[in-house]
Amino acid sequence: MALVDLVMPKLGESIMEATILKWHKQPGDSISLDETVLEIATDKVDSEVPSTAAGVIEEILWKVNDVVPIGSVIARIRTNAAEPVGSQTPPPPPVQQAVVVETKPTQSLAPLPKPAFVSASSTGRFYSPLVLNIAASEGVSMSELEAVPGTGNEGRVTKKDILQYVAQRHQRPVGVQIAQPASVEMRVPIQQIAPETSLPAPVASGNVEVVEMDRMRRLIADHMVRSKQTSPHVTSFTEADVTNLVMWREKCKKEFEKREGTKITFTPLFIEAIVRCIKKFPLINSSVENQHILIKKDINIGMATALPSGNLIVPVIKNADQLNLVGLTKQVNQLADAARNGKLKADDTTGGTFTLTNVGTFGSLMGTPIINQPQVAILAVGAIKKRPVVVETPAGDSIAIRHMMYLSMSYDHRIVDGSLGATFLTAVAKELEHFDPERDF
Image (cartoon, rainbow, N blue to C red; front, top):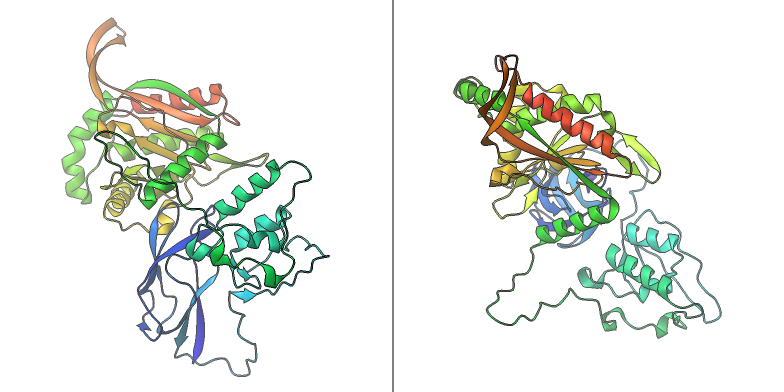
């Protein structure tokens, strides 16, 4: 018999923790390899965590609604495999290790060291590594931390709680300090500290329906506000004559579906043009970290997709520059179907380097999209409309009915200047206008 640790998987470079939504297995239940053990949620997508071994669930270390750091052991599985002969290595310590802290009236605690695991104080209150790291970097002692009201599960201190506390701490006048408890015995029990609660429902007069945001809508709202606070947004606009593209798709769509078994939409055609232009202007495919620009060599295109609930999610086509039109089409359709049916995996929404959103799907002519952090640009395409336009020909100018489309791109003005943003957007429009109507697929 051997014990195998099931750890919270890495869910993307910007995701540090996940919330447990539901356990599908309990201690004593048998489990097969790759069988779903639990469901988790991040700020991007809900996902299932499969078992990494076959056996019996020995122990579950976290409860529903717990926020678990990436890489933490969440369960242990007892397998039928024999342990290596002569192996005397003791099992790894459990994730939750108690750190007993004794305070004295005449001594102040030194700042917390940066821990590797979730720790507990002498009162039994647990803190995530993220909270402890923030406390350590801001010089918040353990006794101070224990006085911070927690809005998380069972009064746990969340990232939001500690950041708000630190902000208020910095705003206090010089000389004003938090009263330190004289000893452990004199501390106010956690359950007696009034935790911060979510904002109360507004009291509206008249014929008004008050609807509370669901979890995903709150996450989207936070993500959008954070993007605006992070990046100075600039939006450029242009229009493109996409008549050749529209006529080609109309001519080929039935044959394409018959031969490839999937429908071709405009989205893969737009992505194809974007990828070509990113290769010409690689700075568009980057992110900002502190005072450094990270130019991404992989071209991973996110495509904003509306869900039946009305919320929005952005699945990502990895290495889009390595796919032909058929491959792009199949990836687009597969990810869109998975998004609408709630079948997206956590990896399907991570790693994006540039985002496309089609506001024309809902009849809008154009929009000013918000950058999907940590990317530096997002391109929106509007509805394709027939309009009379002036067409230049060798025989002279004429007025013709053409399929026209507006494009807009919001970009991070910290590193993308107006000249680069406008040039890139114009290049995408030219790619679409110069679409070869005789090409194969």
